[in-house]
Image 1 (cartoon, rainbow, N blue to C red):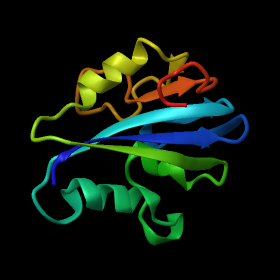
Image 2: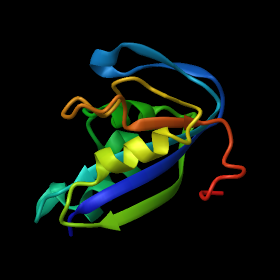
Image 3: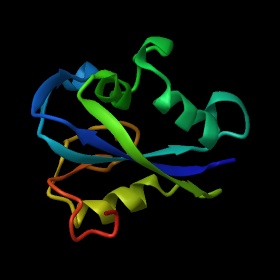
Length: 132
């Protein structure tokens, strides 16, 4: 199955994390929406296998992608996952729409292969959003 996904991650407290080539980034306490895609037909590039990788314990995977660095930190917790099966890559469209309602973004996070400002959006709270 191909498609796009949204990970909703709760950051328990304000911390600084080294995110590969992006350097050290401050993450505020709150909610982060990470939008990614998995457009493969088989193996690790399918939608379900990509999600399995993200939810696997940190010691079971190599830290490679920006999101791996974030999820590797003990203060981050995936609280919800949305799967959007689709043959069309939708991550940039969804990231752009979420950016319009978010409180902030982490510049260049997860978007090194496109022209988006970010694929990681910050929300102080989920109150009054359609995600609560």
